[in-house]
Image (cartoon, rainbow, N blue to C red; front, side):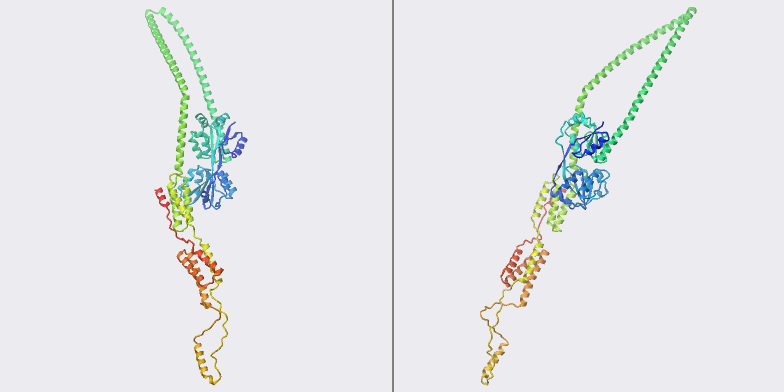
Length: 612
């Protein structure tokens, strides 16, 4: 029974194990990784609010982010690496996510909606490390990419260096792997003999990326089988198909082995028949030779001496042939001895090779381990290079900060852009000086408190509505004393002189009138029209201060307030209402209306020097 080992994190391989057991396989769960929750900073979470596209790498990324309950733009376009991740997105956020046909980074990058992302704000929700090619390609396409790291994969504490011996004793045939982190967790702590055994196992992986990473561990391509994704159904289908292929391949091998055996049997029979025929021919030849010898003997007795001489010559020729045969036999013996010596030398050579085989294997294993370490170091260096900063992205963010500062006068917005740039640079070395300049700019911008325009405007409006309630600083005149007309004319003719004087006084009174008031000090008096004009003048000054506030003209604002304060203090009684108005005006005169502070971004020059 084929034994399949499932290395997925705890709680994620039970369904696959059940399917394999129902299909006749032996399945074991052996989690080599554990998921550790990470809490991103507010700077890392803030891009989710204005994101145009949000990409989730795994189901863990969805579940970990949903636990943080961030402010997320649900109108953005969502993407998922696989269908199970898309289902999790819909369950947690109620949004349908786009899923590529090929469930990996290459499949995502092949989507048309991710082909043209120049200027788009993209958030990549993922685990720590991994997917460098996806991030690199999106940056190259001009996207503003933000990484939101919400978890990390770590080797389980129960993973010990001798676990391969346990797997070997359990006759493990295949291993299911769904991430590069699992490959590192399996291969890193092994010695050379354990590594050699592991490289002979069959591996069922979730993507081409994992397959390429396995090849760096000296695993043969024939032992790597790529599924259509990391889902249980995709892995199950891959294992079943591979099992069927191995069964079909085993049939032709048996036939091929049977064919040579039959051929050898036929060849043996043919050889035996040929040997029998040769023996019969030799026996007939011997019989024929004997008859000729008898006939030759009879003839030799009858024929003359010439015939006997000829027979003698033939006999000498036979002896010469015997000598040649003996010489050939001696040469055959020498050749046989030399052949035996060669066989002995070959045997000694094989023994020497066998004795040195373990030394050679140990040397090869040591070399393989060293090569593996060098390859891993080179891969890490390549990953660091792949995830290097895009100078164009850094320069674009700096220009955005300058635009918000000089064009929009938005100091808080400028600070937010610089904080985003600092978060981007924090993941890369060699940016210390640039980050220091950025932090200085952020501190300067945060120290600039914005003018509370709306609050000041409302205070002025409240003062404006209180002007009509103020009491003027003037007395109310009492009624005039009853006047005695001293210039009244008498009807007596003898009083004509007095009547003449009284008439003159009346004429004078028509030009000058003098009234007397008892017990009242004389103070300046205002007519109703003058009071109305004073009220209107104060209201005009306050309205002028409001207009100057909205148009950001500080000098006009303070001048108008000063004039209104002077008029209130000069013409109105110092009662509670007047004191309240004067106190509010004095408080407004102390406001710091720094509408156009002089700010210089130190980071501008540092970014230019870094980008060159």
